[in-house]
Length: 212
Image (tube, rainbow, N blue to C red):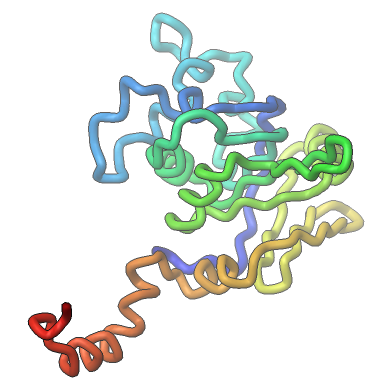
């Protein structure tokens, strides 16, 4: 897994809530577990017309968002089925970070991302950034006002900065263990292998035949 520390890139806006994984990568493309070949089919049903030509009214087909690597979207992104392919498709397209708002419903804080999607993202090195709704709305408005707006995501300091004439920064929270894994580029297997010598030493001291 590639370590994530700082990333500067163009912002693209997908102004939709409740984007589910079947829209991120439709089921007919789930024919491989090699983690490649999914980027061209990201948001396939929205991105292409029935004749397979690009849909000119879909956001990511707009010239101003070409080459974007930071996606700003609405609440409950990645809901639906648990397919890890959704993360692979977003990464292969070129996205390094996804920004979405959490919501307050009554006294309950609702996460910006579906739990399984967020966990799959963490395990593959895709950063999910949760901000408040007013903060995300401000980013969307600034992206509309300033064509080609870029931002820097600073994971060590947990900050996203918009590169405007007068820069604006937003702080985001992230669990320390997830932050550490992303910065070091460690998935669950790599994290376990850091203790390979200790595991081997333990196994050498314990004969499984003696366990009752």
